[in-house]
Structure formats: C-alpha cells, structure tokens
Image (tube, protein in one colour):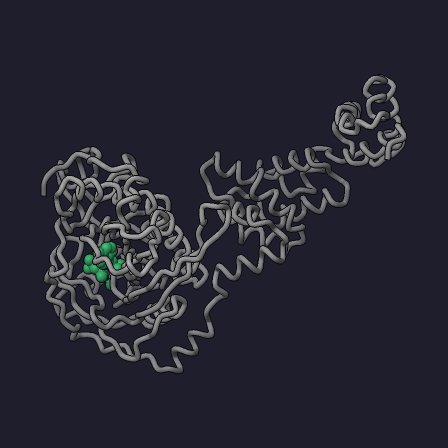
Length: 520
Ligand code: ADP
Ligand code: MG
Ligand code: ZN
C-alpha cells in the first residue's frame, strides 16, 4: 500500500460533465440487523461493549466450532426482501467468501453468493424534481443477501488513526458475526444530472423503510448502515437520459467508493466521482476499476485497491450450515407483518394534518414526523405541533447539535402547552417562556406557568383601560387607523402589551382597539 495525500485530483465542473456524459451508479448498502444475538452463534450484539467480551469459538473461528443460522435474522432478511418488492428464494445456501484480513478471524466471510435470499425487486424513490415538485425514480434491486460483519481494527499511535504510522494495531471481535444484509441495486441509468440527489434520496428512503420495518438501528454515523457507491460514465447521446438510444450505449468502467457514512456524503461522493471520471476520460486515460476512499473533510475520494470483476474469492457452498428454505406460508405470514410504506404513510399524514408540500418537507427534514404524530395524538392541533417541533425546538436542537427528541421536551408537554394557548391562558410569547422553563427542567408546562406567574390577564376591564390610555397617548396613530390604515394598529397593540407587561391577549387587544376607533 502506498501513502497517499488527500489532495483533489483534476475534476470537470458537474454541469459540463452533464453536457457530454451520462452517469450510471450502483449502490450497495450494508445494514446491521438489530437481532439480540449474532448471525451464527449466541453472542450478544449490543453496541459499545468492552472489546472482545462478546465472542465465542464460533465467531472467533476456532477449529471445530459449528455455526447455526439465527432464525430471527432470516425472518428480518425476508421482510426486507418483501418490502423491496423482491422474490424470496424458496431454497438458498450460504457460501464461504475466502480472503484474509486480520479483523476476520475465520479467514472467510460466511455470505451468500449466487443464491441470495431475495432478488429482483425495486424501491420507488421520491425526490425533488428541481422545479418545486416531486418525482418518482424506480431503483431496481438486484438482490438482498445475508452475511456477517467483520471485527474492527484499531490502529494505535500515529496521527491519522490509519495503519500508516501506527505503532501497533488492536482487533475487537465483538462485531464479528453480527448479522448483515447487503442490498445491491441494479446499475441505475436514466438519472442524468439528478444522479447524486437520487443516490441520497434512495439511501434515505431505504433507511426510512428499514426503520419502519424495525429490523435495524440504521445509524449511519455508528456504522449500522453503510453505503458503497459505484459510479461510471458513458457517452451522452440524447438529452433524455431515459431514452432508448441512451440505454443502448454500453456502460463504462466503474469505481466503488467504500463506506460512505452519511446521507449528505452519499450525494457528495457520487457527484465528486462523476466529475473526477470525466477528467480522467478527457485526459485520454481509462478509468481504473478500483475501490476508493471518501474523505469527509476535503470532499474528495482517493484510490484504494484495484478490484476486478474476476477477483477470486474461491466461493463455495458453506458445508456447516443447512440451506435456508422458507415455506410459502412462512413468507406470507411475514408479508402480513409489513408496515405501511413510509412514503404512503407520509402522504396519509400530510392529508390528515392539512400541511402544504413545503411544510411537510420541513417536517421530514427536521426528522419530526414521529414526534408530531405523537404530539397530535396527545391532543395538540397539527398546526401547533408543527410550529413547535420544526420552529423553536428544532432551532434549539440544531444549535446544541442534538436530536430534537433528546432535549427533555415530550410530545405530551407540547400538547399541554398548546392546550394552555388555546384555552387563552398563555399568549405566544408567554408560551415560549414556558417552553424555556420546560427545557430548563423546571417541570411540565402548567407547572412552569404557575411557578413563573405567567398568565394572560383575563380581566377585560384592565385591558379596556390600557387600550383607552394608549389611544389617548397616540392621537396621530389613532387618526390613521380611523382613516382606514388598519396596519397601524400594530404599533398600538405593542403599547398595550407594554402597559400590561406582556400579559395581554394580543388578538383581543387588536379587536378592542379597532372597535374603539370605529373600524370593523
Ligand atoms: P462487488 O463485488 O464489486 O461489490 P456487487 O455486484 O456487489 O459487486 O455490486 C456492484 C454494484 O455496482 C451493483 O450495484 C451494480 O449494479 C453496480 N454496477 C455494476 N456495473 C456498473 C457500472 N458499469 N457502472 C455503475 N455501476 C455499476
Ligand atoms: Mg458488493
Ligand atoms: Zn459468538
């Protein structure tokens, strides 16, 4: 291996590439299943345990140890296959994929080769059409197969955490043998300039689907979901990337960018490779079929190892495991457990809640769908639930760098707060102060309002007196309003609020001001 610097290679601007080339991509996603035990032994799978405490002779590959297939993992694999509109094999085997790597103690990975559990499916992915609407792109699923994860190497010493310059390396086998499903797309053509966005939208939709299935934590940052992005370019012969003429052009040589671990990086890595391929091709050189490493910090990829389609892993059927042969009844029973598809669920909720497309997009982007659903179920109006979770609370979460649901404010709190506003006990600015108190751990909304003495003055006499006083003090403004300049009322409302130390109902104050000035 050579030491490489992370400097950018020459690239061609994306828009220019799109005038001359048609991008093709293939996405391989690995998901760790959330089964309690590993794929072929009874070891625990919990994340974050002391190194090498969740191991046994089977997952350490000790001689004579015999694996047994985890039934729960097979069920998850079948459910994933069904949710991806795949066919489910009625009979399939595991295979040994032989290669040496220190974090793989058996010297082979138990995987599936030409007999995957699921194959021939698709996922319809919604993405922005670039003109304010949404479009559906059908991503072909070539196969979804079962395999096991490897251990993890830790390189100690040196500044980069990589093997180069390290003093020594440690291996943690806790992860070795955790069930993985690898989901492989067909070569995706027809995406044109939207290829990077579609790559991101696909991984995002897949993540939502896996989450809805409840089969994985799908935490990209923790590595329980990882994406390898294959990219190639071919000559562009038509302005319609989905045309028959374009489809007839043979595919170019691909590169495979490994372990891209965030949605944003998937989009950036695909975009970068497209622009890099164009520069290589323009220089007259062929693309080297190889793996590439993605560098989050600099936004570039660097060369990994050469990888040809003919790489010989000496695959052969695993002799220590019986074939997996789900009956049709098993498959139908599992099909009945599939959740409502996330995209349909989103449409249903949007209609129920009366949100605009833009509002719904904000909600989804803020990751607030579930929490809003819970808040509405707890009695808040959909509008108020959206306002709080995508407004004040999202801003707070963002600035603190935490999930919106991890700040100690619950759906029940927000519903209670909304109730206090609707009952006329709090106005908006008071409600915000109450929320501050809840965030500071002072208790639930009603409790905080009591403790901080926040309550709208319900005494109409006091409000009337304040309105009269303010009108008398600002005859010029009052005249404007009398002449029909109703917007000017805002200034007087502000004064009334001040008179009442913020404890007035602004809508009531406005109505009263207009009434007093004879404007309806
Ligand atoms: P590998 O052993 O290299 O990981 P896989 O079959 O698991 O092979 O995955 C290869 C991925 O690359 C698939 O998603 C496939 O659709 C995609 N692919 C194959 N050929 C091309 C190509 N010419 N351009 C872009 N993607 C491709
Ligand atoms: Mg692969
Ligand atoms: Zn084990």
